[in-house]
Amino acid sequence: MALFFRINSRRCLELQKLSSGVGIRSLSDASVDLKKIIADKIPKEQERIKAFRKSHGSKKVGDITVDMMYGGMRGIKGLVWEPSVLDPEEGIRFRGLSIPECQKLLPKATNGTEPLPEGLFWLLLTGDVPKDAQVKAISEEWASRSALPVHVTKALNNFPKTLHPMSQFSAAITILNSESEFVKAYSSGVHKSKYWETTYEDTMNLIAKLPVVAATIYRNIYNDGKGIGSVDAGKDWSFNFSTMLGYDDPDFIELMRLYLTIHADHEGGNVSAHTTHLVGSALSDPYLSFAAGMNGLAGPLHGLANQEVLVWLQKLRGEIGDNPSDEELKNFIWKTLKSGQVVPGYGHAVLRKTDPRYTCQREFALKHLPDDSLFKLVSQVYKVVPPILLETGKVKNPWPNVDAHSGALLQHYGMKEMNYYTVLFGVSRALGVLANLIWARALGLPIERPKSLSTDQLIKSINV
Ligand SMILES: CC(C)(COP(=O)(O)OP(=O)(O)OC[C@H]1O[C@@H](n2cnc3c(N)ncnc32)[C@H](O)[C@@H]1OP(=O)(O)O)[C@@H](O)C(=O)NCCC(=O)NCCS
Image 1 (cartoon, protein in one colour):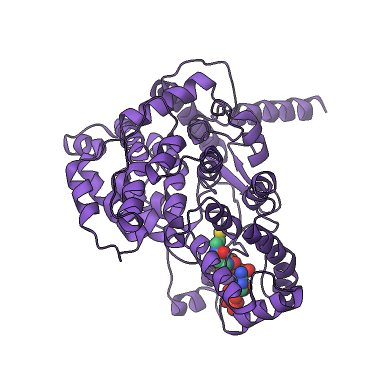
Image 2: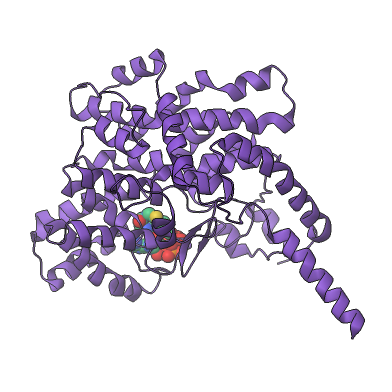
């Protein structure tokens, strides 16, 4: 009995030690030097993972079935992703914090009520909830790194207006890699233990520049290229982005702070996150890795769904008007399904409940625009769609995801250009996937290379 107790308490201690890593939130460190904070955490985290793998490296975490291999690898646990974890019932947790907890705990702008994305980035990277001064330091740092090289501005100004904003966004990010510190360090033969340092520099530069790239695209396509103004070093990232886009309504700026926070990360298996990680694992620089992720975000089953929702709602309004009855709405939804289309903004590969990112946008709408006609329509769709998707008998999650709501909010504040919406998503997504890339380099994760089989081999392998 005594031996049993000793062994168990030793195991408990061991587990406690293993689980107290970067994910522990502490408010004690007041330094505003984010890079130094990461530098201090890296060796501890490396040790923790080394110890974990030494004791448990051969343990099984799941089985793989034939259906999983043909089914988009759904449910296969095959990736380590540090910044966030997605629970099917509860939704996303950023370093353990839910969206409502982030809304409560993360620093806000003066007179603001929504979290600043700078604070979320700090949380995703360090596991700590930052203080106001730390977030302010990030705002200032991003402002100071925001200038675009001339060749990128020129390329953006030369794109035809007809080129989709996401293509422009991805292309501009790709050619921004002329600035990569990682590339310079790699070609000068820097030791691999230092790869994370220049990945950090590239990340900070890229995140700083994304609003300028995105605003230039917006102004070029929809505003005859009229000047985007300049970044104010005394203001936050979302404020500067909003004003460069041409929006100075304080409520729109608050919406942007919320929007850029909630779209940042959704664990590692989604297309944009996984692609950034995969391409990054070949030691492609952060610009190339993130641009690849953006090409995935541009797909209609992923980030482009926020554009598709608006296209679908417009079609709906065109056919059955602004105030349809539930019956008219049901018929329209069935028509969509029978024509072999998906209902955009509904369903999810992992979630099995209403996406909390949808819920917090709904709460924003209830607070700021309760009488908006499009918001009312979105609410009616929320009531009518899920039972219909359940009735099809095949949709695993009939509930709305993040994309079902965002467009309606943007429309309210005058951003009517739905082709552009995925770019906003992309600016936010940088925060999560690049935070993870820094950790992937710090932990020395290898090139990703899962094994594939042909159908013939697969059949042989299970002895049919
Ligand atoms: C997100 C999405 C791609 C997840 O795909 P998934 O994991 O394969 O989803 P499921 O396992 O529930 O799919 C089972 C079936 O239901 C269908 N389905 C899922 N969501 C659907 C929707 N919103 N409308 C109609 N059919 C849907 C699938 O197309 C699939 O049909 P099939 O067997 O004929 O191929 C899917 O729900 C979808 O296409 N949603 C609409 C696009 C969207 O909002 N994307 C943004 C996601 S954040």
